[in-house]
Image (tube, rainbow, N blue to C red):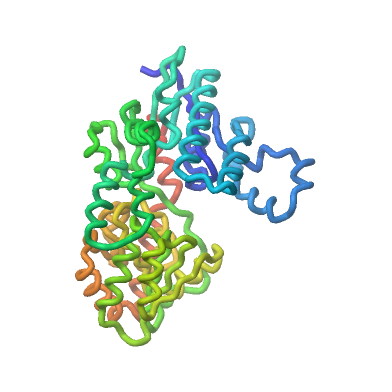
Length: 405
């Protein structure tokens, strides 16, 4: 049994909009948040000297619901991350090094405060395997499926369709034995595992985790205002938003789009900052497709409102927050069962397609191209689906799981 009540939480960036530490703070059980860059930790005299673009960017790195005296900011991690990126270091090496540093800081805070640990899985290994004078409860939040299942799915898909280096990166073929151990085996040291989706839980069960230790707590969304109404486009306008990599299933979408017999005015907009060279070649060879390298948050919301469908047939997805973002704007979504969609559905605005079933996806696109334009009722259903998943519900679920509701 643990002899502590509060928790130390660790994360880099503003993962999940700080919902995990906010959940603990709302329950009065956040002892410390260990993070890299946090705007609330910058003295006002220094903040006033920073360039306005940096201030605006850092402004998102805080949350008023988290007490300032509970934040442990490890600025060296933020600086080293920027430096390693400029030097062209491999991401997996940077993540392994810096995630481990945050994990060690979490362990120090837990020792000092005699706290429990609630850690995202990238920051769990060092803290979970450390020595303590007390008996902390070790809770892990798994937001991405276990790498073993991901590697198997991507390897099977690689034999059917050609992608370039995104397969090697996402399947983890370059990672060292040490990094593989900390990412594949950290669940073994957890007393409780919170999973972002049922699919994520399935991946852990396949790895050997006990079902009784795995609890599904789906993410949520703060519903935006919708003053423009929920008017459906008159022509079929599909949208893809995500990284241009094998895992997201963009190649399946493009191949299905090529095979489908669609109305002449049909268009597919692909929004991604990075795209695998093989997928980019496939994209440019597909008619009716436009690539946007990146858009602002406001522009993305407009794209959701003007699109008939968000199509992201991911092969492997821990959750897929973009589905909720689209639904909140009244945009129906299409994805695979290997995502959050079975958790947040069923809904008339959610369409599931088997993983890798390109012919079925092509037929589905043909039907949706005829059935979605002008259907305002489906957009109302989409918005209603998102409304059932507020972030407050996620935070309540986290506290209930750790026994602090």
